Amino acid sequence: MHPIPVRKMKFDIPPADTFDSRIIAGNLVVSYTALGISLYVAYLEPFLVKSMRRVLDQISDDELRENVDRFSRQEAQHYQQHERFNRAILEAGYPGLKARFDQLKADFERFFKDKGDKWCIGFVEGFEAYTTQGALAALGSGVFDHPKTDKRWGDLFRWHLAEEIEHRNVAFDIYQHLYGSYLFRVKLAMIAQSHIINFIVDCMRIMSPVDTARRGEAYRVTAQHRLLVRVGVLPMFFRTWLPGYTPHDYEVPGKIAALTSRLTAEAESAS
Ligand SMILES: [Fe+2]
Ligand SMILES: [Fe+2]
Image (cartoon, rainbow, N blue to C red; front, side, top):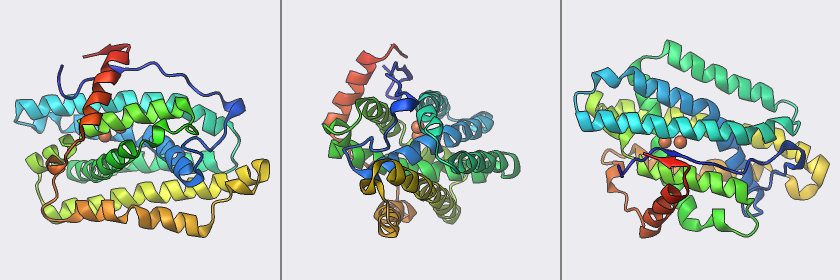
């Protein structure tokens, strides 16, 4: 099996009528962050795929070209699965959420149309540099196996983040292969990383008051919580801005390898 296998998974999709935001470990901030990520990737990941495919012919290295193709096929599976889960969030009735989601869509359409290849690949790299670390931290914490995690969402994120670790080097490698400029990479990392965090915080700001009115004070996200989300990611972001940063340096724990083997066995198909 190739180290970046393309798996087709079958998940139990949560319905909208029983939707409860507290999907991860009973922790509201972590749950809203996960929900924001789920919405975000529905438009981000098609942008990743289109951006990568637009430069495929410029890649002179056969192995890298295959990795880029596999990266794109993994990401295509991710956003299709998230779209199925996102229906429950969007149909649960949060005033303003659809408008913010539409604005996100418009952002990515504008980026792809107006920005050049180097900008788009830099954005892809900046996003991937964050998700790899987020994936290692989240899977290492065992949060998706927590008894208070909604199993359906836990299964989705466990699979998605495991594949983010599998293809962690691809965006960096293609950026280095085609462009290599350090300062431009850092600039785009900052743009990409602030773009997702702003979206996640906006989702919290929109969803929490509605959930608080419906379900009680335990669903209230405060300004302090939102600040915590912004500050909490800074060490991960900062690491990617260093001149010597490379995802090739990450040590992947043995339990991630065991997880990816298990996912391959559970997949409807894997190639
Ligand atoms: Fe992904
Ligand atoms: Fe990815």
